[in-house]
Image (cartoon, rainbow, N blue to C red; front, side, top):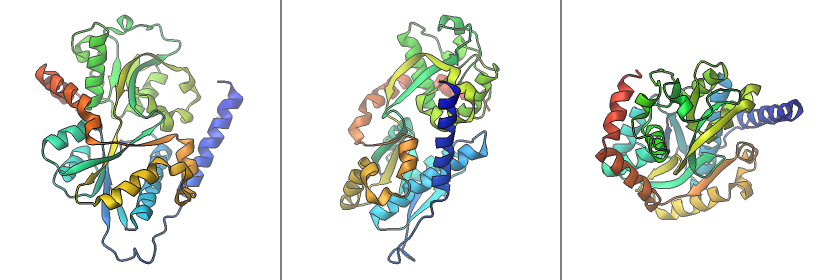
Length: 313
């Protein structure tokens, strides 16, 4: 990518931020004083405040759109920890929430009375993890990375995707033993910046991480994948099953066509610029992941993951 094209991307990024942070939610008189649905989510820590604000305001725009479609107040609640969010969802303390796909499967197994509304991703409609290196790196293959500093997020879906991919590539030992993995980095975005500074040799991360991070540093043009996982369901919005179908069905339809919906006119530019994908999903769409999680439990991957995570705190 040449410098002129990169500059254009930065300008577009700045315009998007301006568009979404100047958007003011409007609550109708009919909604004022009305009991609200609670929408809860946890946001990963951000290295830079501007990226955090961008994602928060984008989420606020989505919540405002949902509120309009529900014709009911929707109160956004940003939860300080992922564990706290999951406990609230499990206990039925929130009406809508954003969770990772493996978290959804585990919540359902625990009897949580939730259903999937739609998946939510930036770029691809499904998640794909890739092993990323700098273009100038000497580590061009999986074999080259043996014993090297490799980072992945301390979440189950990240670990299992890496372990499954390594197995497909003929490596049948845990990734924390194949790589030097005790890096204790707070966020995946921090890891990508460390990759730029040659403080780590590779990062295992989602392809959509670049949406909020890559415009911030021109060097990201030289971050390249050397191998990737298969596709997995992305994070998703879930809702309490007490919300009636006559509310959910039109909402799914609206979100699937958000770029054409006049109610999204004030902020749909942000959705287009960040390539936000809303895909209606059903519980059956997670059956393949359920089988993978069963295998992970049977083969002690989850125990290995839990043991490794303790070393990262």
